[in-house]
Image (spheres, rainbow, N blue to C red):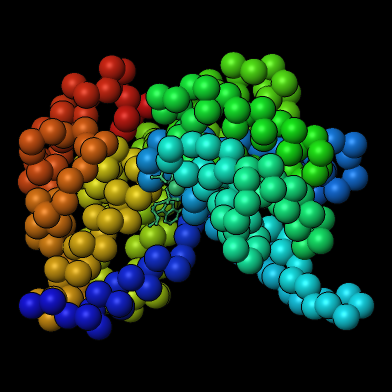
Length: 320
Ligand SMILES: Nc1ncnc2c1ncn2[C@@H]1O[C@H](COP(=O)(O)OP(=O)(O)OP(=O)(O)O)[C@@H](O)[C@H]1O
Ligand SMILES: [Mg+2]
């Protein structure tokens, strides 16, 4: 039976994130660019790329959480100070669409009213008035879509916006975004700071980021969702099936654990067992799975290692 309370309880985990090595590097890199931009001649921009579910938007939200809007009285007017905001490139891509998205995020009234030139002009005025220190522009890979003419227009628009308004821009998207930027030397020069988030590695004798991520996540589930226990994922052999089904992808890992917890709680059980993980694997789709068509929680450790070895060219996921 669907139970709203249980779902809300499990979704508490969505409010948390884990600062593994590469996300920390991304967050600190972005913060550094914002700081450098305050006193440098040109704004210092940042490009954050990664495949789906590697944590790009999570990193952006972590940065945004450090900035809060505030109100200020200037003369007879009260204005909203918006130090940072998040917007995304719409699909299909147009200059007006991007300007609209930014105006909406900064809180402009009637953000769609006027031509692309009107919207750009208003955006420039508001960026100054709202004392904006950084713009995060997600889904930049939409520029890769068919209409190259419009994509080029948006690239040119972005360049002149950076030049004129002097607010640093954090571009976010899939790894192909690097190609969009590098195809234009002027943009490449403006986006020299970059981080690519990738699926986390399992590691060998020394625990890799993935194992540490799982351990931190389990602790968070116990603290925030208030469940009793999980299988011992600190043991390499127990953690390996998680890695095999998720390919080290943070989003897939959170989804899998959430599903196992949901199944367990729906059965009135506060202790999550291997059986719940077996069922959870069957309930979801795992695009990065290393063990296609088999449930890794049902494989022996030898067969699991073999499957992983067959999948990875070097076969060194576990014992590198
Ligand atoms: N560092 C992290 N700590 C905890 N959960 C994470 C972390 N990174 C990702 N996740 C989980 O993965 C989900 C998806 O992450 P996010 O939206 O940041 O991915 P993304 O890279 O922006 O993906 P997309 O390219 O599809 O937009 C999050 O809602 C969260 O559940
Ligand atoms: Mg995202």
